[in-house]
Length: 463
Image (cartoon, rainbow, N blue to C red; front, side, top):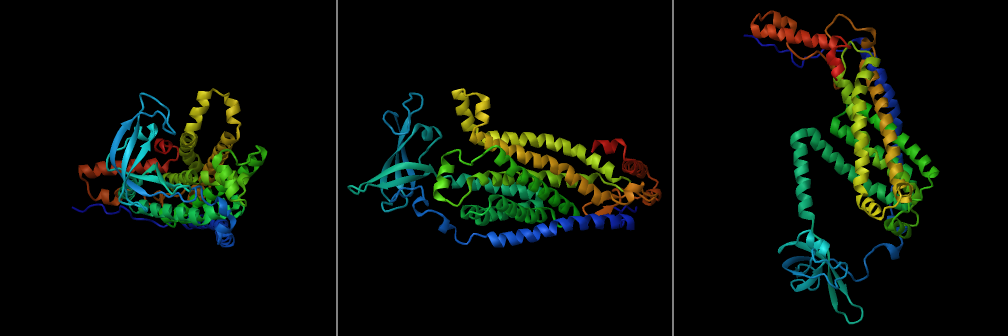
């Protein structure tokens, strides 16, 4: 018995649709090419070649001269009282500990030393065999050496979870997941090699943030999602959202009189890197903070338009259908950004709750006002990017035939950059196979045909 074999077959779009799509793609390229060239030029002009020349020599490190951080292995754990121990509060319910450690590095490697452990570190769990870091502090008076606990060695759990994450991404998302991991590595390299040093050198933080974000998005989006009209649409929406966020960030920072100096780290940066503009750092933070969420929203909206498109839908109908998805995405993303900000400053929020300071006074302080500006301005760019991306995608997909109501030909469904026939057996194949299963298949195909033929059908509304 012959089987239907038309799955995946494609029909070329009508000349009118093809011309409309080429016009839409040309408009997008006309927007992206100048931005791409400007990004390359900015990378070349602002590339930091000698960052250390802009860092004060006496502030280049927070370590005291002569202090080192050798590795050690815990060989014994003795529970003791916290009375008199620096950094701990005497508490009968939370004891401290005295560790015996084997030095793995440094001049005294191979020797065993005693290291006190505070209640907070001891309560996190420490066992024989754990790898730790200790401060080795020589005394300038008599040359004696003092050892103090510094940190746990966390490389093993971090590597484990990173490996599990990478494996799951590749297994579930396959090639696209692997490409997204490569894009993530590229993004980290751009920030570490270009953005951070360029900020320290003293280049305009807003331009640095836009340049780095643009370079990252050009590579990451195309690497993860391929070279297609859909990806190009998402890239246009992402860059437009970033430009909006950057402009609003500049205005909001000036209007709210944000200085960029709110904690000890900011003062350390100001003293160590005199060319760094801390106020403009808030603007740069706005651009970077919205980068990942913008990417998520715009690629989702572009994909939504392509998935619900068919040859009978016009731009307006496609836009309305995709915006139903976009509104749900915006609603969930609002919570995402708000909770992410709250999680990042949770210890400070707990302290303020404990001291019972007025809520309005807390929120208008430098630290919280800066976080609020970053969150709110980034969210504004995010919300505006949804209708922009949806409108561009609808113009790229539905322009032409869909606006005129189509023809009597079988409807076409958009997949990626091409328009395909609806999946399912062809009517001719079904007619030549009058079995019960084929009759059921014919009914399903007709129902699918009717679903995509009528924009106002139930199937369309569900998307």
